[in-house]
Image (cartoon, rainbow, N blue to C red; front, side, top):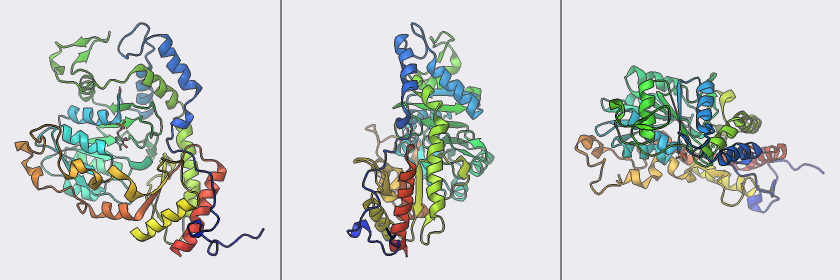
Length: 437
Ligand SMILES: Cc1ncc(COP(=O)(O)O)c(C=O)c1O
């Protein structure tokens, strides 16, 4: 059979034969790998009738083992399992003593939890633009640090860090704490240093969409003893615990309030099993993603996200950029028509403008400065008067707005076959030859 030239093939969107008909696998990286190892460890907890981490009939210490694995691999002094990434962010900011009168810098491309953690702590979020790394732009961040800046929340988005070293250095020179959000980048690294090594506190999420998952779960890493002890008390009931796992309300150093966000042993068991598979999961995504990316590099009109260290990319997303918003939408629709999409309900291949609350201006509670108390806290707090003039409407971050409109993302499942990869490359080339020519 003679092969039709890509520039002459009829696009599926125009009635031609699609590159493939079967859906690509679901994204949800860690979920595909849940199996016997998880079952065995969860079974141990169930058989021991001990699902609570601090004591029980026959504690299996699953959460402790997860924490030990993290401290060793990430080369950090302390790790603390918590109930979610959202909880981890809140606990970290509380441990930093962030409150009314403070502002916390964060990038315009992030997740709603990042904003919520700042607002619920009583502080004012201050947006920072992103660059082609799709993470915080260090220059805009340096320009935005002011006398009220207590912390910077750096988010390692879509699988890989941006200019994390530079940002940490600038923040620390100005006496500002760094909270490193690795929810979307567990197992990634940059120049040999794992994501999660830089922040005064680093956090992870193990929700279903993440590189490893226990359904729900989170973790905090730090080196400072006092910060760690504050996190322990705050994640729990506001007090320290004894070696026997009993609350110690009389320790005057840790008489606070707690969020009630402990990690349970069942989730700990799932995580311990998933941690053993982390490199396989990220390795599979990285190798498929970079095979696709290398095959497409040099295609006229197609640009790629700046990944500072490809070797350390954890690989769950391929982000492409187009000359205009219109081209981006046209390209993505044509790609989907070629069969480059996941099962019904998945978000496998989308223009990034459809990526919801990852973009600051798509968060109505932020734009409208909503509160969960009748007094309008924290926006109404006298110490936050300076926040009144801040606008969170679209237009606040020009580069972020531009990238959101002319970029698209393809989720790279952790179980893509060689055929899936070849189809993705073929579809991109076929569409590019006509839409970008
Ligand atoms: C960047 C980022 N931060 C924080 C979170 C919150 O994690 P969780 O869903 O575990 O609360 C997420 C997850 O959705 C995330 O993507």
